[in-house]
Length: 421
Image (tube, rainbow, N blue to C red; front, side):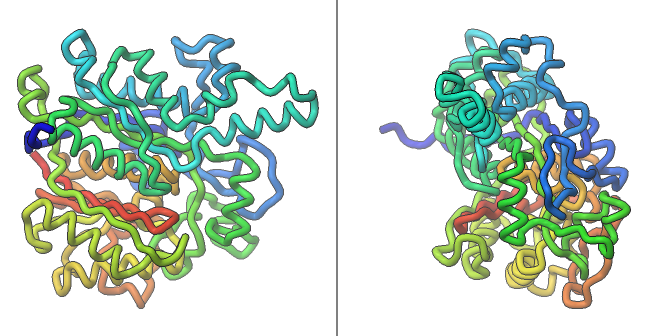
C-alpha cells in the first residue's frame, strides 16, 4: 500500500437547493437577507400539527432539460434527480470540466439519511391498490444509497469512486470528510461531496412528529400565523426542528490539481473530527460531542481561539441546543462569548443528510464575503445569554477559520474546520 500523499484539500465551488431556493445563488441571497423559507406542507396531505416544513421552491424534476417524462416516472425517488442537478450546478460553479483526464480522477460521495423512501411509498401504494405486478422494477435501484451519485456520473461523465456515506443527519459532513481524506491520500484528485434528502412524505413527517422531534404548531405558537418563525435555534421558545428537503454538494480538489487546471480555491478543509457517542440513539453525549470539536481543531493544527466563527448544528430542540451550547463553552472557555455562532437551520430547516453540506457552503461563502449569517427568529434565552448567536441579521465579521458542527441519530458526530483562502 502506498503512503498517504498528504495533499492539501481545497473547495472549488458548490451547489445547493434548500427551502430558500433551488440554487445556491437563490439560497444565499435570501440567507444573507435574513429570510426563512418555511411554509405549510404542499407535497402531500397528512393530519398533524407538524405541518410547517421546508420545501424546495420551484422544484420539479420534469422541468430539467435532461429528464424525460419517462425518466421522471421511472426514477421516482426524488433524491436521484435532485443530486444530479446539484452536482451539475456545483461543477459549473467550480469551473471544473469533466473530460478524459479529470473524469477518472473525480469521485462522488453524496450522503443521505433516508434515501429513496418516497419511491418505497409509491411502490407500496401501487401494491395495495393495484397488485403485486405493479411494483416498479426500478424500485430497488431507487432505494440504493449510491444511485444518485451513479446517475450524476452518467449525466456528467466522471468515473471515479461513488458511494453514499451514511451518517444520518451528519451525512453531509461525513461525505466531505471522507472525500477530503481520499484526495489527501491520492485516491482521486477531485470529489463531489455532500448530502441529499427528500423526506416530505406522510410516514416520515408523522414519525418525527410522534417522537416529538419536530415543532408542533398550535394556535398559540408564533409560527401559527407566520410559518417562517417555526425554526428558532437557541431561542427561549424553541420547541423542535422544522423538517426540510434539500441538497448540497461541494467540489473538493487537491490544491495542486486545482492549480494545474487553472481553478481558484475558495477555502481549505483544514481539520476533521469525527467519533460516536455510545450513549443514546437520539440524545447527544456532551463528552464525545466536545471531543469531536476538539479533534477537528487539533487536526487543523490551530488553537480554539483561532476559530473566528461557528456554524452550529443548532436544530431548535430544547435539549440539543442546550447540550451543543455547553460543549461550545467547554471547547472555547472564556473565548466563547466573542465567537459568532450561526444556526442556518433557522432559515433552511433540518434537511437531515443534506444539512451539513448546505451549511458548509453557506459558511464558506459567508467567510469569503467577510460575513456571518444570522440565527433568525431569535428571542433571547437567559440560560444561553453568554453566546453570540448573531440574532436576526447578518453581520460584517472577517475570519480565517470557522468550525461547522454536525451530529446525527445513533450518536454520530462530525465536525469540520474550514480555512479561508
